[in-house]
Length: 294
Image (cartoon, rainbow, N blue to C red; front, side):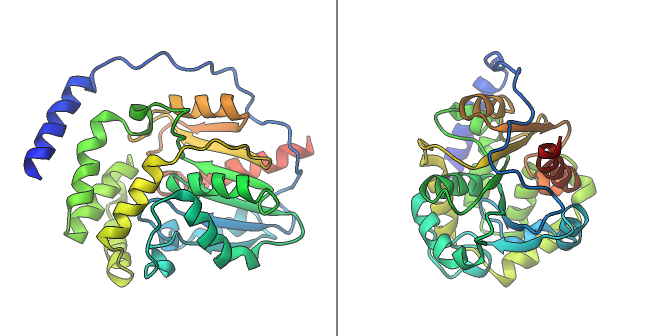
């Protein structure tokens, strides 16, 4: 295993300074005209779902207060991926569509018939929600994808920058919870010294609801192998960061152009926007919703 890591690291050095292709055409409308006008002050359901190896407590202790600040009449519903959080005793499937079926059975009762359901999904969960919206277009009217990268639209080393691959392998092989969580945090935040206090919280989360190595593997490969080939009828806002150290932000421009998504990019956050820029995230969603008023 150590030899494999060394080989991968040396391989990464070959490509680390390789110039990336020219950015995609950035003349993209910030807000695409809405098919489902909903304002931030309406009675709406907001679903929150975290990505790979994360669960609802990773949104932070103050997230409910923040949601009420930006969306005062909202009803907040947390969802977990199979294999994590409250669903940690369920075996994580190996394919994205299987996640959709398990999660829909678990959470469908929370979907309102009012037609005012919004879901905010990060990274891997954005792939799952995209597939969900394609298969069951009536469930969510508004979708916010955060730091989500589509295979096919984005190249391999745009979805996962070559320089960070050794860290990802180390995370997968690391059995010590604290060391694994420290590496995950160092990838997700661009303010690690400032956010280091989260490490104890994340270790406690993993100890109280541990995620098995098998489930970590299955979630990882489900996301790696999935190709979205459908169409989303819901309104979609794609959020990313220009300083994302995992995903090349050029990928977000490509997705917005190909799928006609609304797009907004943060200037400084890491891949984990809910960690580095949670207020910005909810403000962007609020502005996107209220753009329908103009």
